[in-house]
Structures are given as structure tokens and as C-alpha cells.
Image (cartoon, rainbow, N blue to C red; front, top):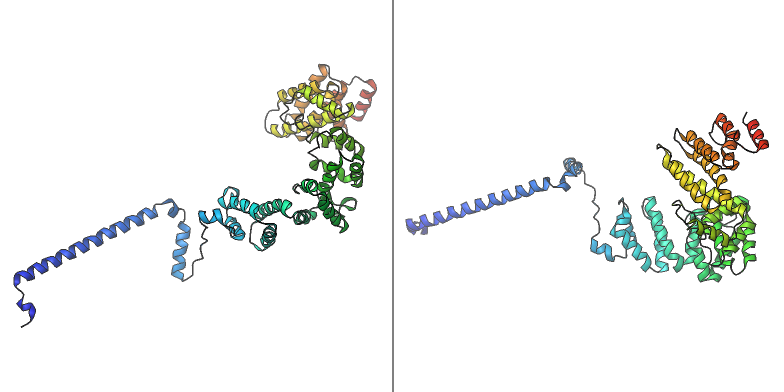
Length: 440
């Protein structure tokens, strides 16, 4: 007799009931787990991340059906790794697809890392950059970060790279580093490096047998000599081809204290007035006197020009340049808008307070500059009305001449019939007759 036959019927019923209860509990758990899984899937599909990638999801499904292997996904480095990493190349590559990369943690880490790296490490990283698949703007910014650090850690390498980068462009570079600081810090090393570059023929290209790339370097030497050896400074200036000298202005912003008059005198001896006054208008000697904001106190401007020994003729040229620059800015701002008479009246009042003798001439050139740069339909009416109003209120002939002469020689789009009307207002009879003949 089998053992199961010996089990009492009641026990069998109890076992069967327990088994059925167990099956019901298991089935209920599976159903609950299935519902939970379905809910998570639904939540995932409704998430912004899933909705932004429908094409990607479909493409993966398509590739799965066709047997094509999906491409490997780039995994961004963790925040903790970025904040401490010294892996220059990996940090660089992690930025390559970033639009606003300068605001990322990786960019900030690269800036910090560059300051921590030795000269050898920076030179090695700079060389390795050529093999990295990096977009051009990012590459240039990163090279600039490295070279700025190398200006103090390995200046010979840094400035040699600047020369190599900009030599092919045939113009003075906007960014060339701070050679003047190296020259002040270690004049022997800086001078030796520069003279070796000259001897190798690096700078002997372009205009006059030399390239504009030499301008930032020559300006550093010139500015370092103004106070200690003005004659040597002038000799260096004279060695620069005349065609290039006006380009020195962008590198002569910081004039040594107490050397203002010597600086103006050096410029005066080296180039035409229009060029050296343009340089003077845009450096530390006059930075608070002349700006687009036009809010400097006239008396302070007068006092500064007196201290610098600026002559009346030079002052007139300076006033013309500055008023014309303001008019050029107004023409740009007024495109598509009604020209602002109020602005011109304010400018005129300010210049009148600084130098009354040159204000009429400056206003005349400003009106012509405005007309040249304006794209408004009423520009001709605008400048003609201002010219006639100021002439009627006592302004001199000099205010009218730039518009009249510009019309006569065709350099400005001012109709000859209107120019003849202005020429008829010239008080000098001989000049008036001459201008009217030219306008016929």
C-alpha cells in the first residue's frame, strides 16, 4: 500500500487548501509587479527626456530590426572627475560639442589646470592639441589660455608661437600677449630673443621689407625708453617703415607716468599730425577726456591738453577727429530712425566749452561724417538744416566748408544744388566765388 493512501482525507484537504492559497498569493504578487512595471514604463515615456529623443528611439529600433549595431554613446565625465582631473585632452574633447563652453565646469577646470601645469606640461599639451579633433573657435581659445600662461613660464615659446600664428595674416595682430611685461621683467632675455628673431628674418616681410607683426614688439621697446632714453626711443621709431608707424597706436595705450609730453613730442617728430593725434586720442593720457559717453568736464579736458603741450593746430585736429567719431556713432544708431538734433546740439555745446576756436570746423566735419555713414532718407535734410541754423546763429565759414567741398569733389552724397545754397552763405567773397565755380 502506497504512503499517500495512508494519509487521512482531512489532511489531504488541508494541504490542498494551503497550496491553492499559495498560488493565489503568487499570482496576485505577479499582477501587482506587472502593474508597477507598466506604470514605470508609462511615466518614462511621458518624461521630457524620452519625448526629446523620438528619432533616436526609432533609429535604435530600426537598427535592431536590420541587425545594424548602434553607435557607441559618448559618456560625459562626472562632475567629481571634472573638478579634479589633470587629463587635458579628455577635458578638451568633452567640450567639443558644447555650445556655450565657457560657462561649463570643464572649461573652468581647464583654466585652473593651465595655471597649475608646468611649462613642459603646457608645451606638450599645446603640441598635442594639433592632433585633437577640436572645432576652430574652441581650439583658438584653448591655445590662447595656454600661451597666456606660457608668457611667464616659457616666454620664448609663447612669443614664438604668437609670431608663427599671425605672420601669415600680413597685419598687426589684435592679440599678441604682453611682451612689455617680459621686457620689464627680464630685459636681457627678452631683447636677446627678439634680436635673434630679427636676425633669422622672421619680421622681414610685407611693407617696407618688414611685417606689421613687429609693431607690438617695437612699441614695447619704444615705450620702455621714452622716460630713460628719448633719443633711443626716437631712433627705434625711425627704424619702423613710415607706412607702419600709425599702426603702433593700439600698442601704445599705457604711457609711463610723467612721460606725457615726451610721448607727444616723439609722435610729433615721427608721423603726420592726423596719424599721431589719432594715437593720442586713444590712449591712457586722454582716456577720460574723449569717449563716446561725452561726459568729461570741459575744464578738465582743457587742463589736460595744456599739460600735454598740445598746440592750437593739434587741438583743432583732435576736436575734428573726436566730433567725427561721435557723428559716425550717431549715424550708425540713427539708421532707420529719426536723426537726433538734440545729440548734435549737446556735442556742439561740449566742444564749444573745450575749444571755441575749433568747434565750427569740428562740427562741419561731423556733419559730413554723419552724412557719409547714415542710411536714413532724411540725412541730407538733417545736416543741411543744422548747418544753416548754426551759420545763421553766428558760426563761421569753416562749418560749411566740409559739406561744400565734399559735394564738389564727389566724396559725399550731398547734391550740388544744396551745396551751392551753402556756398552762397560763405562770408569770404573770394572763397565763395571759387566754391561756386567748382559746384557748377
